[in-house]
Image (cartoon, rainbow, N blue to C red; front, side, top):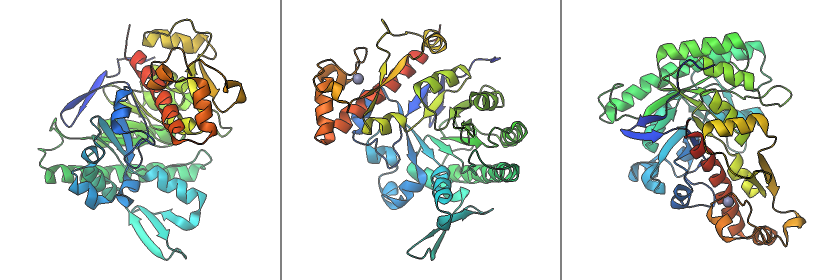
Length: 382
Ligand SMILES: [Zn+2]
């Protein structure tokens, strides 16, 4: 049980942001198929961009010219920049010829025979995040898959601590260059450190304690919250939450399904980012409130009760199924998104069938509104 209350807002660059928040993936400075204004109109308050990808395209020269990603993509809300670590490690794990992790940072090999060698360090990641101009920056960490053995976990925790310490030094150096008065400046961006150690109690505790000692604004749920059998590991998430007491902001990195989010909200997590709603929308999978629900929950308590008692309270509607070809009803009768307010299931089914780009937009809008609505309900405490 939580001893104190998690924060209901936090400030970054002098601006206050309401919690909880779900942040869709805008890896390359765009939530795919939508304009920034369309995303904001859905009630989405923040996005996550990717440092490593933005460094490659459009590149730091363009980012500097536009004074950061917010102005470039005309996004009025919160921007969190991911360090790029997860993408690099996924790449290396899939194909070890593409790079390796060393004490200094991540070495990448490219070119036809992997003859080009580049080094991406924790310092590089912070420098680029300043050029991106994000509100919350994330330290480069050494990510491990659930299958990592004890030796690899230990290595990951030690390296993550070292890299976080180096990131903070670089962060403070960049604050000075950018004209902030230092760590205590209320107008500065925030810095988050992911905790590693997978589900190994002792290593995760050591990781959290070492990072708390260095001192960050927020702490992330690092690693994959899944068991070796592929089941979502709530115990792991609970432990991670207990290791980062209030008033720190807890970010459930990469989480999750609507059910995962409601459960982790109960553990004190207040920031969530996940590719599921946008990626699923592109693959015809739409999130809808269970058709058996007479009315929607209005408060965090009611939603948590629903999660505990009703199975399922959220359903998947696969719009490409033939059964929807003549269905005149909206995707979800409880939804107030522009898609549900205007079009039928039959029309969206038809757009997907003729491979019309508008299908992706209408589906993405709906799924993002579902997640934004979840946040609006969770924000109401009783
Ligand atoms: Zn809708």
